[in-house]
Length: 254
Image (cartoon, rainbow, N blue to C red; front, side):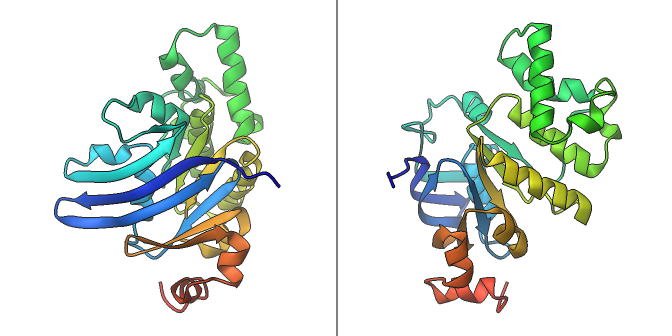
């Protein structure tokens, strides 16, 4: 089998919030395609690591990042890197659905519109395709002009995913996207994540170990801001190399 080029290469990544160091010497390659779960107990740095990957951490005034995050052959931490372009290529879905207080159509069309003028017919196609990819089209196709705020929580989360997909990202970051949802909505999102692995690289932060085992191809285990172990999900969950990983996935702590 030929070696697959990583879509992201993280080297010597350290992060401090003021005087507090929260990520320690992270070295990691993320394979293109598939789903990578990031697991670990609360406070282990999972969401913080995710926010480094599209520089959302820049929004924290006291944050100081050191190291390299290589994407497309360039270090996204360089001061001259185009952050707007980065966030189009590396989309993010948050723990709580955050649709815009606009119509369903305008939510999905927002990204393509700000990238430049798009003919209405072409925009209609982009919106439909994004909603289909997010498994939402059949539920909303007859009410695209209604407010996104009228959707259920699970539908709003899938709409936020469609909003990301409309600009065709290479990577989709998902920060505990199911934690605020009921079991039925969670199952829909998990099915969607499974389908998305064919078209986009997904990095999924989850506190739900069963979810990580169900949907991910690879798993990263963080503890206290350190990367303890990473590898194929089956190996992490059944024959971990580090006893701390084994203790966590078997429920001895966390």
